[in-house]
Image (cartoon, rainbow, N blue to C red):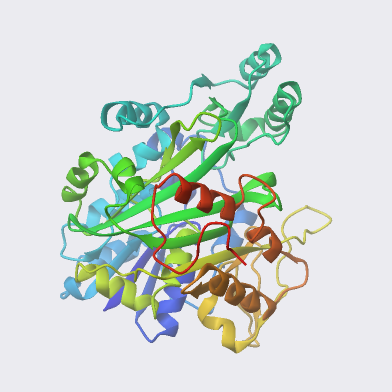
Length: 469
């Protein structure tokens, strides 16, 4: 099989690079103009500096064959054997490119506008939950278009809130204070410092559910056929103890589940199967579930409809012998994962910044031991003229390292042994002790044990509650 990747931010390029290393033909179509990438209503406000664009387009330079996405899509119309190609769209807002090729006979994932709207239109998502998820509660939400209105509301509120921007560039912010006034002041600080990001498409304040346990079940389909389920437990926060700013993912633990587990019956009602049947190729559905330890109520968090999660996709692929086996199995309508296995990952951040412009430092050497290559997912990387690897400086997400095993202890031990084989001056990653911690309620292991105690799933590998080493 040959592979085509359509990308804007380079999220999927680590996967493409792995496939190329495995000996498969890979072609990358990069979207060059940010105005082609954003929604129609965002075009007038969309902006990417020449500096940022230059660095973004240097991702995997010298390592992967890259061409302009629009030209590649036109060429795809002339391919004579499309069934021998898998087309991978890294985000669900790439539906406009998917629409152009989905009926040409290619294998792949083909996100739709509806998929994208499930993720960005929070009102639509909550209405969907109310109609089809009878056992889930939805947190109260306050919507704002102006920073001033949001700040005035927070100054008068005595409740706890979470800040969520409607635009991709506006990060979710969860206050870490247990005092409602201090928590509101933290959100006000975020709004004051990043007004352009939060006013691009507006923002919401969502009711904070205290003492939450977050679990994210996922279900895979191909041409409407259910293949398998898994669960992702991730630490999104940057710092140990789940403190500081949120990242896409700092650590996670993923394992396949039994399809009839209780959590899957909650997360995947019949309507999900019906939607999957309307999708060609790979369809991914996950639902973030927030469980309050105070009263046991399960709240809806968010959908990431028909797009892979990052780091989740890398952690899932770590469970496969080779990356191409994942794609070949799903096209054959087989479960790509094996019950009785578990995988882990940790993201490595580039903490270096240039003093003059405060941008992430570029052109610093990336080095690693050859034996960790299978579990190393390089992200912000390019090849030098001398053949070495350096960071691009496109953003602070430098790489992801994974581990795999038949027990959590084995997977985590392998993960951090792999991390020891990676070298980069100024790198940061969350430590092994934090991964195994039982000291705070939102830790991965405490969440895993809580789900077991409530009978939400079984562990198809050898470990019992409270016996994590």
